[in-house]
Image 1 (cartoon, rainbow, N blue to C red):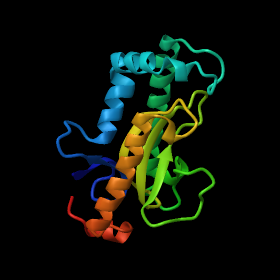
Image 2 (cartoon, one colour):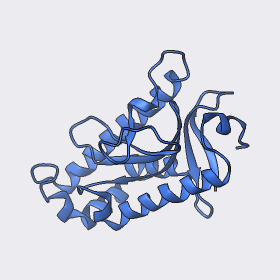
Image 3 (cartoon, rainbow, N blue to C red):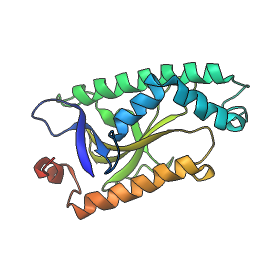
Image 4 (cartoon, helix red, strand yellow):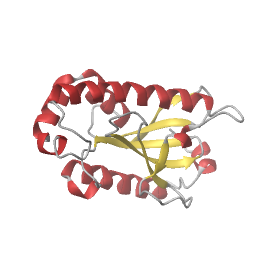
Length: 190
């Protein structure tokens, strides 16, 4: 397992990082970009498999698979642009940072915790994309994965449970590596 920089200013140890799991071809952020933005076949297959969830009414009226693909690509573009912009502006004193887009994993859980599990989602119409991460500092997040969430809770679908497990596993890994906060991360060898 490696931690790789994604949206980080040179010579800074803050911004958006991603986990690259052993045996995987890509880190988790790159995998999300590939699946959500660059691979419409992945989206077609996903929405075909989860068509009942797509049309359950959780997100309103019935949506065609093609509409879902278009919404997803638009949301992904917005999400990645927002993450890049906030990661860079957050390194400036007084600048907005990634904490604006990353919220606690569990709604209404606003107590700051060490290695807090968080999720990023957009504020646009169809907001079913989730990027999951561990918060190291106010503008330092390590992405553990991402998912399309068409149901109310993560416990309802296997692909969401897998993301939840990765959050737990990577939090444990960070503790084992002695990374509990921003100061620890500053001296960690990437």
